[in-house]
Image (cartoon, rainbow, N blue to C red):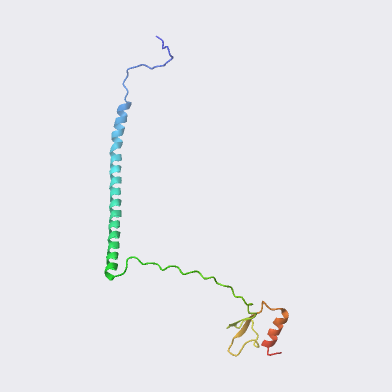
Length: 145
């Protein structure tokens, strides 16, 4: 007896245990899976309860703060003053002073002649001067010598 479309078959009508094994495996796994799902639901309910409790405490704190301010007569809204007009700042117009003087209280590298009576020495910035102007400043500082 041939098969017209070339189908190949192996015997027929035997007992197949696979569906029964699948059902037994599902029952065996269903118990631990159900227990894990219940535990997960339990943890989720605890988290929701904690968050809800914190929200309730925060709401109570806000209400208490508002009632306290209301009883104290403090306005609930504080208006911000209007910004002032911006003024233009002008840069200094005149020439920069040629000599800036700073007095320092240290001795390192200073000759005894440069030290003034109270232990200070004079520190000059002469960057904006020519060589002749610097020499004149130094001559005047030495007392005309």
